[in-house]
Length: 102
Ligand SMILES: [Zn+2]
Image (cartoon, rainbow, N blue to C red; front, side, top):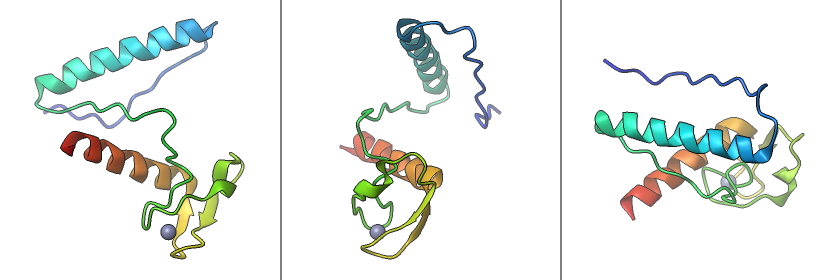
């Protein structure tokens, strides 16, 4: 059984943005290949997708959460309390599922 629970990267050797982009491209290519071998799909979500600004419950887009220091927030529309990273992860998962089903 293959379990993808953790991916750790050390970026200390990266000197330029070009090197970073190349590394990310190589990693996603290899990950996509490995996932396809076990019948899974890798979906790339647009980098401008507002994952941490959008309420994962009601879809309200909160411009006040653009500030990276805002680690938690309450949705002014539906009142749901969000942890920034958990909310972003849920939105990215949902967007990936939307893209696959489109
Ligand atoms: Zn909401």
